Amino acid sequence: MKDDFSYVIVEAIAMDNPKTFVGVVDRGSYLRVLGERELVLRKSRLEELDGREVRFPGEVEIRMSSFAGKIQVSGEEIRWYLEV
Image 1 (cartoon, rainbow, N blue to C red):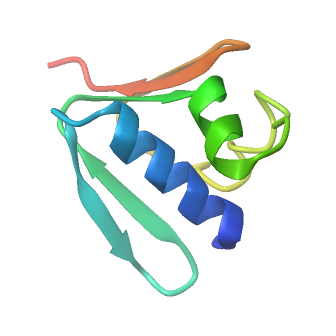
Image 2 (tube, helix red, strand yellow; image 1 turned 90 degrees about the vertical axis):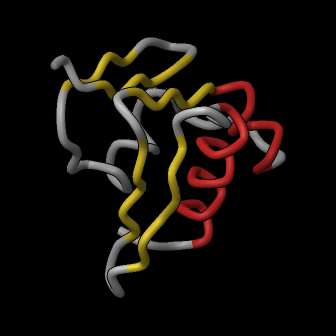
């Protein structure tokens, strides 16, 4: 799903992962986030950027439901990573 909140998610990921965030590709109906081996999305950063409390987990996964590798979800962060 691509909406205004999806762009906030991408901005938060980019800010919190300066060494591993590669970029984003707009595929029309969705955004593809590119990273090297690991990306972390922190609830605190997302709420700071969006200016409201975010249901976490819950609101992010419906927008970023497809990924390569593994995912760890907690009440404070989501971590996507590849094991090589």
